[in-house]
Image 1 (cartoon, rainbow, N blue to C red):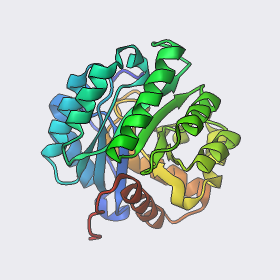
Image 2: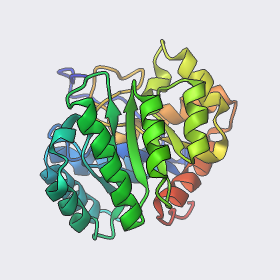
Image 3: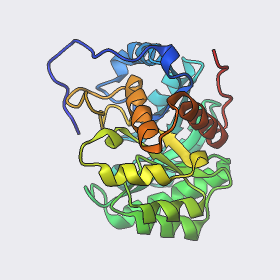
Length: 282
């Protein structure tokens, strides 16, 4: 996790016309560091060409999910993803899942998550994380929604559980993918989309960039994971949805792709997976 520098001046972002149809498929607008300024963050994202934002609750208590849905309801092209983060898997009991099911009745909720496993920090036990992942997969299937999966140092286990439980009919995505090309192949075989974050811009991410080059175009997503994982050259500041353009630019470079065309393809992918209507092209 990165701390914001004591600097109120925001770096400039690219004009909206330069990269049409941008989407941030994963950010945490209800995070205490972002929530009070959510309106200005969304305005800056729009100025940078970000046409759609998926805000994810999941972290902490069910109130974070409620706040995320409330933010989504205020903006036409902002949608919510709700669940229990692996760090909080110990609180993922039947009551919490019932609360999520009730909250998912809101039309702005487009996916269940982020669930999954994090064996790097292990803030919850492995057993609790495995059970929470299974519960989320079952809930996504029951509600006919896609699932968003967090996976850190647990790729083989996550793939095994998804294989055993079965992919929800609406599909799913691995958010902030950081695995190997072999991990990517296994997730793709299961039917998952792979989402890339600002880590693509990090100097030590050459292997990840090579993997990103190989992913089929129709399975690609991009995200910020704001306020985390701020891309270069803005590391040290809090991340925000406007910076998704930097991840898109990095992805386009490694794939030798035209950025606007790649952005449009990713928007189509996200609309297909999450079931929203993409905004018209200006």
